[in-house]
Length: 351
Image (cartoon, rainbow, N blue to C red):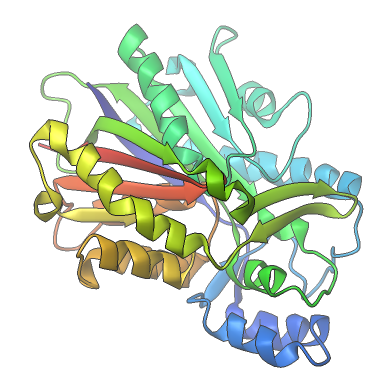
């Protein structure tokens, strides 16, 4: 068994959703489509967002991709360092204790990559294994956990997963495309890191989860519903309004399949870490799995407080569940979704 140790999060400066609309996007979407953009921003479920590049002071919508990539490295290294340092401190480990370092990011690329630069700056060992996962998008944290946990299980040494996304670097020029309006209304920047440990007797407590299982399903017939294209002006996301319908067709069966080997059903799950891709995504999972609004409260609150931060977000929701004032739930299902269309599900339990 492999357990989830400390989780560390890091955020760039915060901006209110209403403020960013009134002071920037109301001009960005000036003209006949402003009414639609205003409605999409108001209904995004986001109250506050984090941006390494705030459009209130710096409009990057016309920047070249090379300009955005240079800024990515400048901003990602210190943000990632803060998240990793927090996760290690919460677990009581040093960077030299790690046997593997997994980094997930789809918003920037460079060589040497973020994995090498952070391993160097944090003092990880020269023989620390590294894995850099790109372009998986919002669901990347769960296959990242899977890769790290397989290393821990095989080698009996700790591993660390870092998910870091700087979506604000990819703001696009004004357009009439409602998909771009939704993207601009939802996405935010963050980093989240999690330590994975060999699970031994007496090492678990009420806030340490064992990763019991991890499964996925990909509906390749709907691959064009969510895209992330590299253009001359950064990375451009395509987000079909049909995405929630595809999730509705698969999510309940996936959860049932995840729980069955453990002898559990949906009623046994005490905590739900649903990736808050947007209000409709949370609604679909709630309705298809027969959950209550309280079951998805942490996902709603994460979306409101931080926006959709892509791959770090599901780790942020898991962390919120562990900090639940009434006590951490003992059985948690984590769900995340992204290009493919791909659905990932993980089962975590604590003693």
